[in-house]
Amino acid sequence: MPSHPLVERPSDVLQSFFLVYQESNAFNTVVSEQGHVRPCVVPEVTFNDHLIVLPIAGQLSTKFCPDGFTTQQYTCRSGNIAIYPAGTSTQCTIGTSADYRYNCLQLKTEAVSNTVSEVVDISQFDLSPQFCLTDPLIEMFLRQFAKGMDAASSLDRLYVDSLSNTLFVHLLQHYATRKKEMTHYADGLSKQQLRRALDYIESHLDQDIKLVDIAKLLGMSQYYFCRLFRQSMGVSPYKYVIRQRIKQAKRLLRQPQKMSIAAIALECGFANQSALSKHFRNLTGTTPNTYRKGL
Image (cartoon, rainbow, N blue to C red; front, top):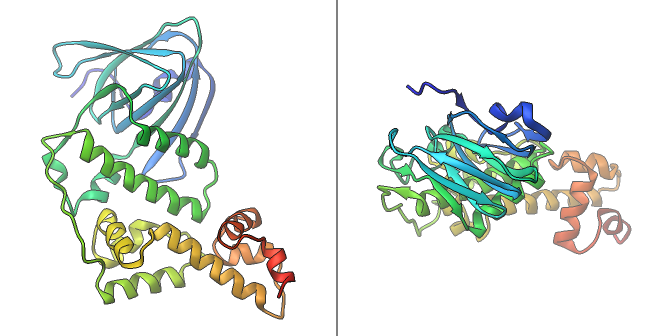
């Protein structure tokens, strides 16, 4: 066992140095955090979960002990991604003239395991530490989570589940040692599985739909379900759910006994009228109100 503290996110050890600090604990798969820190020296800690850090401004010097004996040092600047696998021991110094700003994602180890359990034995790989990494896809994930994890609506939850699923698989495919070839599937869901999935979505459009719930219903991993669903339907589960919610909104807008658009938004599983209007316009080219007036 490590003699230094187990922590989950940078804020656990840096709180006394923060000028600005934000995080969202709304989702089970990941936690998104943004920080603004004065120059400081951070005591050695061990991360309990996987952590991905993207400096936005300033620089971070990391002393990393990969084997418990030897020490390596890296300096990450703006745009340099660092990946700290669960169990990583590190000591950091923020010693520049400018304050340090960052985005980071804490990836729940149990969520990673559950996502890919059907296609790879989680015990057969080790996520490899990475420093000063350039990966446009991971950077996109970090920025999307930073922008989009403030609101905990059912739609946001499904979107975060989809992003998390893709991110976990990307990490395993590109940054894992002793990695095992991941299984590929090409036949899609069976007719019975697809019907069960579609029926579940249809009956829960007004609720918080999660990938993990549909995958459990079919007895498969989230990764497996997403791949097969896309093969069967031609779109991701997230996009399909949005389409079905907009389809239901259209039905309600056509009813002679008019509901308010705000009420229709909630009935269709959107967080609010604004979210409904945004997706309605994206798919139809018009607003719900204009659509109703044109009937």
